[in-house]
Amino acid sequence: MLTVRAPATSANLGSGFDVFGVALGTPADVIRVERAPETRITVTGAGSQYIPEDPDQNTVGAVADALDAPAHIKIDKGVRPSSGLGSSAASAAGAAVALNALYDRGLSRAELVPIAAKGEALVSGEAHADNVAPSLLGGFTIVTDDDVTQVDTSIPVVACLPETTVSTRDARGVVPESASLEDVVDTVGNAATLTVGMTRNDPDLVGRGMNDSIVTPKRTALIDGYARVHEAALEAGATGVTVSGAGPGVLAVCHERDQNVIAGAMIDAFDAVGIESRAYQTRVGEGARLYRD
Ligand SMILES: Nc1ncnc2c1ncn2[C@@H]1O[C@H](COP(=O)(O)OP(=O)(O)OP(=O)(O)O)[C@@H](O)[C@H]1O
Ligand SMILES: N[C@@H](CCO)C(=O)O
Image 1: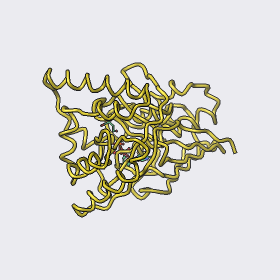
Image 2: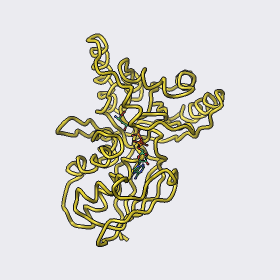
Image 3: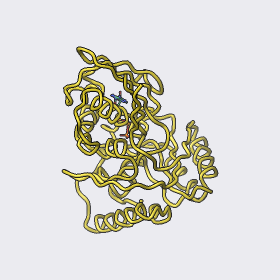
């Protein structure tokens, strides 16, 4: 039996749609695997009632197929599905690491990225890798068509999850097909600023680089209370605030000293529109960790 702890992630960070992602210290999925003649999946934990155990419909089933590694796979969900913290990707990344070890496939973490992304294709229709890459590699990741760049960093964040859900498939449906040159120039400038901020571990630069005028405004319309929460987090000291992944989670970047106040302000702002939420006060952290029992 092998066990992997695979972290939640926050994709996009505003200016890096389908490109940027960060691994979070908490929450995480725990995946346990043992060899079996055919793949069988059991799911427990946060939101498990919404997650199919049929291998053809679960992200880990796609990973087991891709690695030709049938197994009994137990998923204990710490990352609630459809909340914007890369729930489906955490399971896929965890299964990729676990099955690679279980069957001695010898693939590197970077080589596992496209394999884990096959699970994302199953649930959202497209194999975007901006959640699986940080869950596998840790830190801040930049995913392009054929490459991944990773930077270790430990920027403090608050991830606030309302009790509502938004499916990635639906949230991809509102992404505009084209953008003005002005908006593209703006976004490139912000993305470059954010990247330098990550390499310097500088929450002010990262926060400044999170603005995006192309995709995020369309997505915020799907999240009840977003404008209030955004404003409240900034007033409480966040250096930048945006939609986490496809939402409805909201990600605030900050200095550690402000985390507690920001978390309270975000929860209160959702509460003011009648929505319960919970906030994770955490940091950008390590990628999936393998334990041999
Ligand atoms: N192992 C799994 N863990 C979580 N969700 C899964 C899994 N396998 C299949 N799913 C399905 O994937 C969907 C959730 O994926 P979705 O991409 O919408 O959310 P997410 O992964 O939490 O979000 P985001 O990518 O925005 O951070 C649900 O319909 C769920 O049933
Ligand atoms: N980049 C993806 C992340 C969510 O899975 C999106 O925003 O649709």
